[in-house]
Amino acid sequence: MEFALQASGSFDTVRAAAGWSEDRGLACFAIPDHYLFSMTEDHIDNPAHDAFVLLAGLARETSTIRLSVLVSPITFRHPAVLAKSGFTLDGISGGRFGLGIGTGWHDLEHEIFGIPYPPMAERYEMMEEALAYIRAMAAGRAFEGNHYTLQARELHPRPSDGFALVVGGRGAVKTPTLAGRYADEYNMYPDAPEGVRDRIDLARREAAAAGRDPDALLISSAGSVLVGADEADYRERLGQLAAEDGVAVDDLEARFAARNTPRGTSEQVREQLAGMAGLGVTRFYVQTMWPADLERTAETFDLIGG
Image 1 (cartoon, helix red, strand yellow):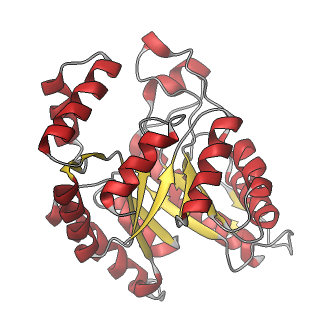
Image 2 (cartoon, helix red, strand yellow):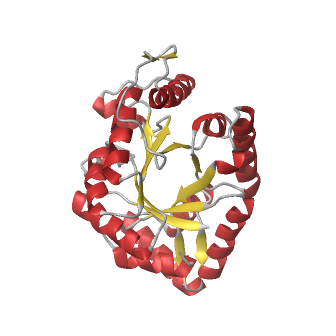
């Protein structure tokens, strides 16, 4: 399994993290696409920058590492804007960009900014049409859908062979289905082994049914990782993180359990990640809990062997 880093913050913060990731030889550096990072009204003033603008800067500050937006809610941008932004970033980076698309899930984010937030079923319809639209735009074909339309034109720029279309999300059926039909990479959150296996199998079946090579679909996962050298070290780190978040240790542990977060001793986490690799996950994006603290991020990668 190869490793990647996902982080957010100011341009200086993500530039340092991307440079560190490139120097370490990680497979990719990704930025989430949110206009609000807080889940509650308590911390809505936490800075949230535009992911595509940050990535354009990183494309010129790095030279070898792949870059990705993981992932952009379909509610934020028309697929023409997504495609133009993605193809432009592909060119700026020299073919190192991955355009990630999802349905969106952050209710408060949409409420505060007044962004239309249709029901989930409709967002999946929009997402499927957007994926087909972007593929059509890259090929100069027309597209006709309920939400979006595109005339057949030789539009430029076209994406390079290095451009990747990424589908990500928690959905157990529709998300892997769309990933198999349209994506170069399918990104999922950690899940129980049977859930991971079922999603991967479905994505690959859909790829084959669409006439695509199912083995060419990159399977990735993304999530926080909390790891210690041994049990005592893990418990100490868990306590520190709980204190920083202002929550009880048991509540934090329960939250991690609900999200299937890789956690525990170095040996335990390596076994957990190896289990995911055995199911077909070939890349794991570590979502750093300390975006401006590369020392602690480096410790995490050291302990998991990344």
